[in-house]
Image (cartoon, rainbow, N blue to C red; front, side, top):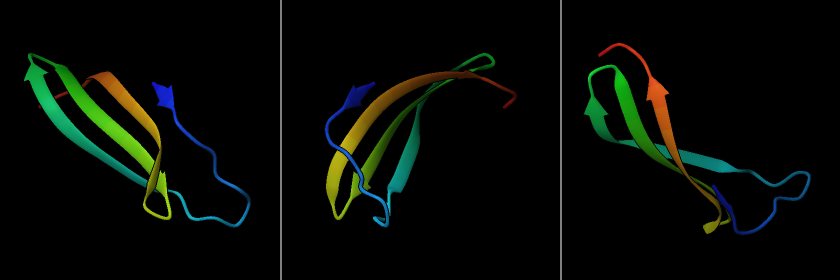
Length: 51
């Protein structure tokens, strides 16, 4: 996870995530959070779940 900025009270944070890979019951995803079009967080996730 990389924190690239901050959000202030009252600002709207937009979250986006996309699945980048699957292997068995593991799911890899990338996510971003942005405020006013500026990315403030980037993350890579590995999740466990059913297909």
